Image (cartoon, rainbow, N blue to C red; front, top):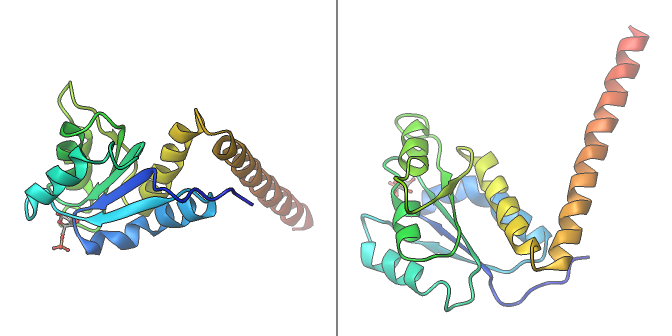
Length: 173
Ligand code: RP5
């Protein structure tokens, strides 16, 4: 079982509570790894000063990585990245008027100078954002590193089992 961290080291921020559904994989993954995180709903356009304060104080609060999710004209991750030198992982929210392509492009196309590491649109991106954040932590956290290696082994075993089942099914046809 993972050693639980009590002090949050990953900050998750989303533009609206309607984004949360697509971030459940991120939350579940971080809980599974026993890594504490904080969650915030704040919008780059509806509550810009809250976003600025949250981002500017993140490093002081002990955050090591930030996950920022937003949909539509998704400038939240870029704005956060402009207020901190912590790594910012952007999750483009899907299900928008342009099916997440709007979120993806507005998040991934950061001009040179302020990077946002943008992952896939939607729930897959949410889960991958948490895993990428854990991979960043793993550079200095041996427990997280060990858990990530175990997680990869379990995934590989799952694929091997599915392959074996398919081979068997085909052989029996
Ligand atoms: C964005 O606008 C949010 O990140 C959300 O994806 C989208 C819609 O927000 P709501 O109208 O559901 O609050 O800023």
